[in-house]
Length: 549
Ligand code: NAP
Image 1 (tube, rainbow, N blue to C red):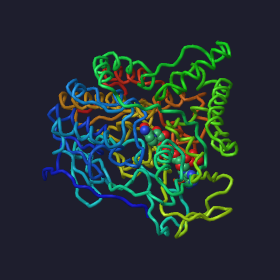
Image 2 (cartoon, protein in one colour):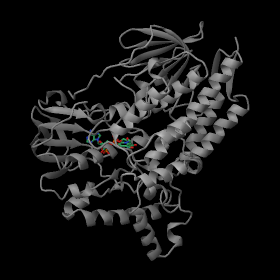
Image 3 (cartoon, rainbow, N blue to C red):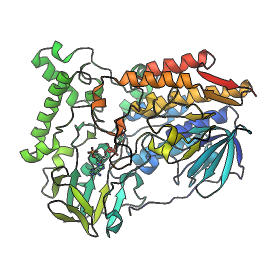
Image 4 (spheres, protein in one colour):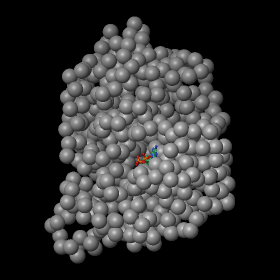
């Protein structure tokens, strides 16, 4: 089986009863702890991993880095923190990101409330005590009035359902469970399965290091250049001076990125202007090409097809073998309908003599063997197999915890036909439970720390309000939940991403039952989402029952 790893944990007290329990010590859990501590609550964070950082603790595969601009990604809640931290690159890599999150934890004295190596197995609502009973997978149990899940949308990693995965005698890893020690790729025959954002980062990074690289691609993606660079001292000073204006801009864009959609339509400009604009976007760093494109590229099929043809042309220019280039050009979806992987020399990898691309739709993988991978046409021998096969997105990390609400129903069963939520932060029948970055929330379509901060601020205000007003139990009404869920579904109607299978539509062939496309995200944009949340709070938490009993 793929390797996992273990790391040391911090010391926490023996207490077993808290005001609040937070599940997960990633970006959301860390900030949630900071906020609740500031309110004077007793809090315990349970974290499966051996350290803090969530995504940036687990995903330590070669090449893992931001694809949001680093300075737009860090926390914005503390001016001191903003001023003292220097990001070294425009798109910073995993080791620096993990260091940053550890720095935040230590700077604000949070570590003593974070219990690592502690996977939450279940959380059960106790109606008579108005408390949650939280049990770890080693049997230890804890109680709290409030539970806040900060489990992340991409933390339930999934392996393919191939026969023989356990038989492989070489080393194998899922990218999410990458070992802490360095892997020596020198001279090794390496397979990478998966060509999403993760696979692309791994492939382009290890290609120069390995003996032979075989990439197993099932679906090609539209990848565009990241254009990462180091941040110079001058830029650093300019960025810091510009923080207030930049964070203000991030509050206004739909996904809290620094890129604003171009107000023009694709066909409102001349062909020459259009091509010049697209060349400019292709040369720009980050997601500008996805988010600052013409306003109709992600909503109009004709505009989308034309831009897709532009990117296909770029791929054909960069990949020398035309047959390989054709395999790398997506045929079943247009640009931006799935998450756009950001690349650095990715396409050029396929010009290297020791790199081979296998299209698993042409020659499907039949099984993993003791020595490699057997496809329908031939068998391959490997020393290392890397599974860049993604996640049971958004819902998977909830499903892996048995969360049992007031009526005895589990959240997994309650969401079996798709999520039902109010504001993407709570569900009827699950009192005093807040789901940061939950389904139906704007955060999974967002430069995530920006939306996390909004979610956490809102959840903290609610808990503060409850404490101040003697509220011992809060819960959304079924009506408010139904209305919100309907609203979220309506917002997604007509959007081109809904026409395609991907983690964003909740499809995962490796998980039983995840073969139906679902609306998992709030698509109205972060500013509109924020307005909804603020309105609910201002109206004394309308759509919820707050009970002082
Ligand atoms: P992903 O986008 O879901 O990609 C998984 C890949 O594995 C796909 O190519 C998929 O093929 C393939 N795959 C899965 N099961 C397979 C099977 N049984 N047989 C053959 N191929 C199989 O997952 P990901 O690349 O880990 O990325 C997930 C998300 O994480 C990204 O979209 C992004 O939001 C986030 N991420 C962010 C960063 C960053 O910010 N820097 C970096 C990496 C990832 P199909 O496409 O055919 O399903």
